[in-house]
Length: 259
Picture 1: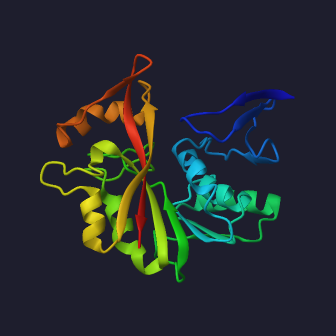
Picture 2: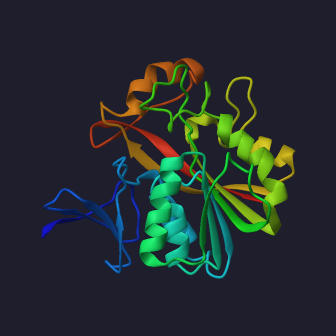
């Protein structure tokens, strides 16, 4: 027995539920409960990674997928697997993430899922139809142990640019790279002395750059993002904070770059 609730951290069309058992164990339910994926020991419940679901659902079937920086639950990998991907490779630099996703893999006998430790593309030696990454994108001057998975460097662009720069050799012809970003990072407009991420992508040789999803991220006063707002506004002085349901909010985007 336990408590079952709809889980919708963002405006996602696909139905997702969160089950909390009386024992305290929690599970993320997908495909109308067909899959009940256990929340890991670090307690992280996927949020922004779920924004990729509606985008990946119609395109991953029979494709080779790379989930770059999969995180503890590897939600992008799991979405790809249950929606019919041919093969999925999930990588992360954190041993705890590798351990827990392997635990889920073994529980469901996902034979077409490979999980390995890699610092971005360090241990990758093949090409993919689709590469997906929900990287750390929070501008942070100083990083404490509780926010190490959030920090995208001083301007939030560190890993975005590194992935964009290094991904092309690992994409098949007409391959696609999907990334998450905050709009204030300058996805399609320049920010100060920095070119837009779109211009960076085109300069790196991608054939196209498109924002395929815009989501509103409501900020709680205890969130890392909310606490970083004063610093973020020193880096991006033209940043505007939105208002959603009486609370501060920012725009979260999914980007598609085509080889």
